[in-house]
Length: 103
Image (cartoon, rainbow, N blue to C red; front, side, top):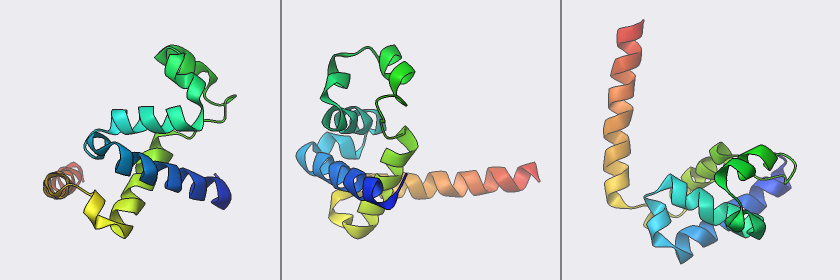
């Protein structure tokens, strides 16, 4: 994704997080609202169709959307729910322990 598209996506994600606070705690809702803003017709399509035609419709990837959200959380910490910070910190520690146990 080029810088221009990433900037547009970042702005879209920020708007969604501001307009729909429930998306701050739910990746699936965030993705649904972002895709709906990027391509409104995705709101009337089945999930299967969205996935089949994602590339042709030039939809952002789920990973790009959640990555943009993480960048926004760093720039605008007031948008990041406190519980999410704690949960992510715990999950990160558990992941590190798991990685070490696999070595």
